[in-house]
Image 1 (spheres, helix red, strand yellow):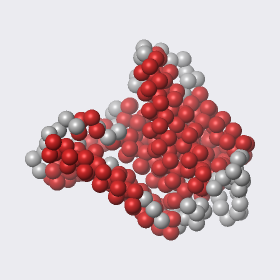
Image 2: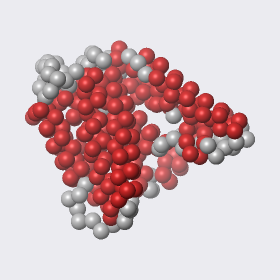
Image 3: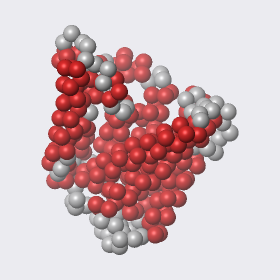
Image 4: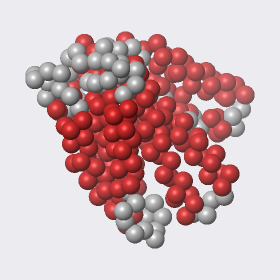
Length: 287
């Protein structure tokens, strides 16, 4: 493996540009949350899910005849059930603080948490939710297409010339840069330049950090579907409402802060144990 692989990095950069460029091939007069804009961009990213695997075929090298293209992209059956369960449990632990905070104020915290879980098993909830095009974009189309292109297709290309550890830190940078295109939407909305720079910088940092986590999960599990599930869950949860937490009274505020810290610490210590490659029948990438 080489510490510097210009061809593979250029390929990944071009794939990122192609992904973002596909969103702007339409002549748009509406904002990004308009149903018409959402539908057009969904068509664009569907096109990318068809095109992206060809980059793996053309620029990836198969080191074994027994390893298929789908396996390299994390589309396989072996170890799928634990791959769907363990990373999601790990991510819920990371969001322990926000989960508890969202139920503060209820008469019975445990009962409120239980009711929220039961809600996700209600078909009517999913029917009503699915009527919202923004939900489809944020929870289905964007997580699926982004994970497929930026993880399932980019990482196999990078991993042929850099170590898994380096790939975890290189691949997310393309993901972070790709999200800077939201600045175009803010310009159209009339947002002032300092705000655009501040928000775009924070978005680059946040998406890159999530990209590190997602790339780590791909390499440890060797699966694509858990990345999609975790991404959708993180979009559902959003950023921790730390500002709102500070509005609570001092005893409750410190308890919530302790829960946030406990979730983060527990996630850190369980990160490797809950992603042991043997659980997922993954022998491709040692990390």
